[in-house]
Image (cartoon, rainbow, N blue to C red; front, side, top):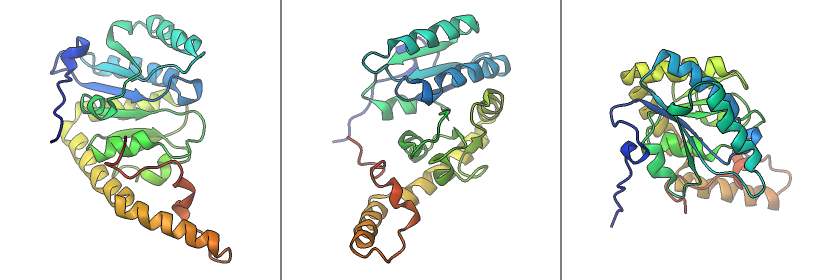
Length: 223
């Protein structure tokens, strides 16, 4: 039996009708949550009724960065519009609350599993153009790519999607179809098979995506 989530925006004190956007990931500096917060300030200037979610907790011994992020939100004057959720084990349910999902890593991302998960759920994604995201997103068709560390570009794409639900739906649906085609269970099996074939036959050229095998799980098979 499929579990039905009772999680709503109201759970976090957010009006159900408010546009919501967010970033998901461990609270560590290279994930770029600080870039996201600076972008959030710009988004809120364009879409003042929106709320920003920072989803994820700090690793053991990493609370200093989390405290810095909270202080930054206060310094930017957006603390009342930013929801820090802490660690969540219900990421799919959290993604359902968001109208747009952001990715802001400041270092090359090896894959970016949450991007694929968000896309699989039909959520439009705006991601930093470095590493894995460039293999997942077809810029302008299945999502948007922006320069790394560019909070203005990130904000403008997020705000545009929040202001244009039809575009958000179109991008989200295209992303859903694309990620299911690329990262289905069947495709995962094929990639693993090709990886082992390559290992047993060194002269055979490895498929482009095999470098991702250790980072990606089949969409819909998480947990």
